[in-house]
Length: 97
Length: 480
Image 1: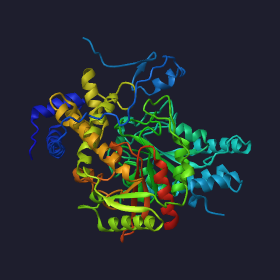
Image 2 (image 1 turned 180 degrees about the horizontal axis):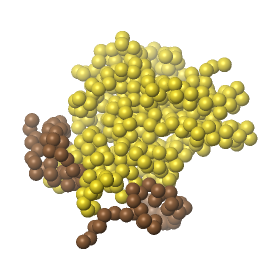
Image 3 (image 1 turned 90 degrees about the vertical axis):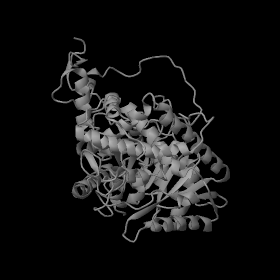
Image 4 (image 1 turned 120 degrees about the vertical axis):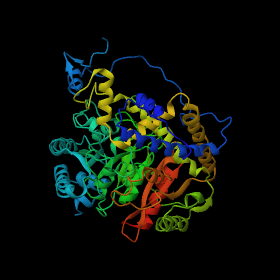
């Protein structure tokens, strides 16, 4: 296996992905990720010098329109999906001490 | 009179129009079939008994009044559970969305409803469409109606199984790397992934936004063209949707004389099951006998499609799935200390193993220091893959090959080795990367009695070419 994922890297990826992994899960993730990256490295066999990265297949352009509200107020139903709400607002844990 | 459950969508639509069957009868027979078979197949996460019967009566009235005249009016349809249905639970087969009730419907769903199709339920799938077997669902495994010891494929496994098991007349699926075509192949039904942008993605819970497309899963090619005609079209709510001609049924012509069909030799190499190979090549011979010009060619870059696909798909997934944070909808962890701990615990408990694996990988390939080496590299290779297809379509109208290297594996075999599961996407992922339309049509059976699918790939917006080839092939093949 060419790629070795360090403890620090898994920690860092966990922060980026907002995931909390158990020690067993971390070990498994290190193995899985290293295996996949070895496989991804196959792409280095191809010379892509001068090739523009293709994010979209078709040549599309930005389109402007007036910002007008077209949908109705569905707050009651929207708030029904919230894990916790109060007076039409989402309740979250304290973010600023 | 033909049994309702054996009808195609178009056949049943005609019978309803001719007053041989009422919409209520059609829906009731289908719901009874679901009751009878769900213990064996488990194609559905939610069955909409009551709502479907209420809607059936409304649609019948509209048909009687002459206000609904389309081919799908009154026909029962199943929807993959990653498409939003207003007022009906939409889970994406995840614990994360176990209680999510959308306040709007996906455009494709709305279009079917306006056409009078009756939604009878939401089908099972791999969690967040990540998987090729429908075994990663939080709500249990779907089984293949041809043999319930086998998987139906995935991620639209519930939709394909529901059509094959006659628990609906047709279904919608979504395809990011093969998720319509591969389960259609494994379940012996027809499935089409349209050109990127043909069907609006509004209301489709995103996995890989640059690759995702909604498409039909159905019993024959005529249904396929008819359904696509209803759901396709530009939508102001999806800026990547395009204005295309949608007269797909005009391509239902039994004539392939002079059609140029290319067979990529690199699709028939190592790893392809012998029975699949023989079935696909005899389908090519059928088209040749009917006057198509069939020749072999080298597509190139085939081995690079999967690493490119998984880099891009996981990167997009890691970004798309950031929204599941326990604030606005879905699951929230029971106990937590502060905001960030709440996010982390919610996501770690709410997502399954495969989803977490892909979010981690995607976060890594997008992280600073690795972004160029992995993500941008994959986008560059994607450009090369697109170019290879562009060159092929200068010579051919249709590319013909297998959908998957094998027939449906047994339950439990694939998840043991995720890499092996990823490799089975070899013939389907490149089609998504290049934005092309691809179709799976049943072309035979293995000795073990499992269906084999033929894949027909067209150039962008050239759905009509693959529909015509598939229709001509189907005419010769007869019903299965």
